Image (tube, rainbow, N blue to C red; front, top):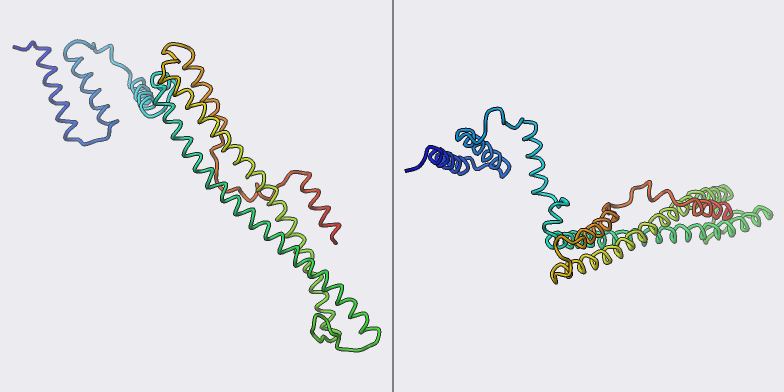
Amino acid sequence: MFTKREEIMRNVSFALSMMLVLCGCSDDSREEASARLSTAAKALTGEIRANDKVPRIVKEQQRKEHKRQDTEWTPENQALHPIEYCQAQLERLSEYSTQLDVQAHKYAVAKNQVLRGISDAEAQLAGIARFLEEAKRAYKAADASNKWPVMIGGFALSKEKAQEKIVAAAERRPMLQATIARNKNMLAALEKKIVKVSDEQKNIVKIKERIQITLNDLNLKKVVDGDNGITDALNTINDSLGALKTDYDDPSVDDLLVPDKASAIKVSFDAIMAE
């Protein structure tokens, strides 16, 4: 025969099992329901008195903390499961490394596009300079002899058309010079991004090596539970992980258009001297 207390606990356990099977709710809901029934059972058996009831706000905080401990690599979880933590961080670093490889490729493609833009604009600017030199020489000769039309670039142009083409060509120079200056600014910013990604890739390799050494030590029992070695090793890993930059999105327009001061001055000076 069961005692009264045992009978109550059996009934509560049965009710709990049926409720969890029928409700089909989430893990958090099931845990909450289980805790509620367990508390009720203890109250019925006298293990918990009415005035010992935990306040709702305290239970809510306990629930949040339980969830955090269950879903995050808290310091407690790291200390209790150092091998699993190191393995998880190796996986995390592999994901970061893949993101960096993709970003490095994007930056390289963007750099090539910017370099091509600079080259094209400079070629156009050089072509305009040659055209203006030829056109002005031909125009002056025709104007001096009053012989029209004049041959410029293989085309016979009237005086008015020659003037129009010379002005149109000259008016294109500021736009091309601005394009070159802007692209050089973008190039300077992209090169900084490329260096940053390269440094991050090197950091990841170093951190992976450090984690692997720690894993080997743990597996070989060189770092003993309770010794400060585990804590020190994990703290070093966490400091390194915290130093990693995890924002690998494309650079913003502001990032690309704001070079360092020396680059900005040189670009402006080159544009002025090219006039």
